[in-house]
Length: 315
Image (cartoon, rainbow, N blue to C red; front, side, top):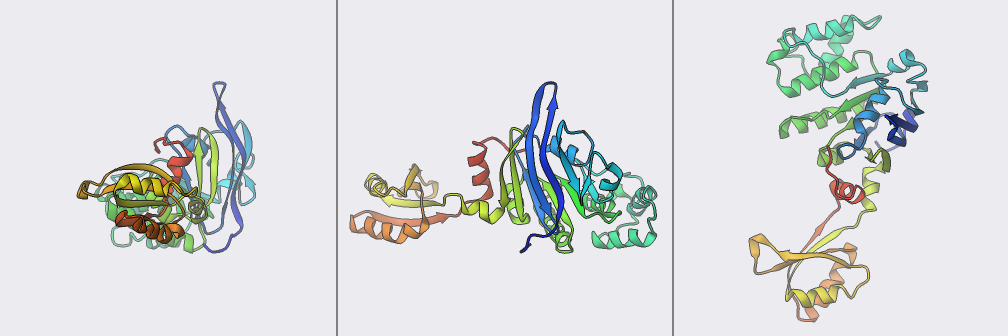
């Protein structure tokens, strides 16, 4: 997604109090047309509570959620016409075929046609197996059928809670590519996940939530640009190299130790601007420090997440 589109989902100062305790403390963010928006947070951060408020399963104490300009809580039916969602696991009937499952849910949507069922089956790539019983489907196929169900009403916003949960690496890759293809067709997708590497590959923008508050929101590349790049040096003698690097205020030596595969060359990690590496390497060599290797470690979403949440486990 190169350009910011129309606002499809707007969350404004959303709060939730349960038993005198504020679980959600004022969350604000927007999701734009045709983008994949990631929602990340440690266990207990408030992700599930927020998602339940987005789809009106629970009422907020304060704040608003609007979808395509409709208030989810005040104008439920009109707002929900624009939303397709899978919260936790897709609800499917294993002893019915995929087609029969979709027919069952289609019967609940006014004006639904058989052609629309055909369209979503093709969209999710289940053409060859749609008339098989769901109990014979793989986990990835069940996820696709659940998404087909969520897309029956032609929503503008698709909310997915852990869509790659339980999938093998190939299934995760296929699901990522599938979700991207949906966004490329103009659908807005809100996705929560604990797989940070996948979110980094999949999402255009992310919000990171901690203890009921959004602590960062923005494009993935822009958030990572704010993070410090780490450079790993293997030097000898280590202490002399460390002293020289620490002479530069822009370099922060964060750890040192042995490299398992080559214990003869100690490892030194430093947070620093990678553009200064050539000059520092030259000075190290001139000072008699042997440089075995230099590896620039670009910041990842996981690095940023751990920094912002002070190492709390995601879930």
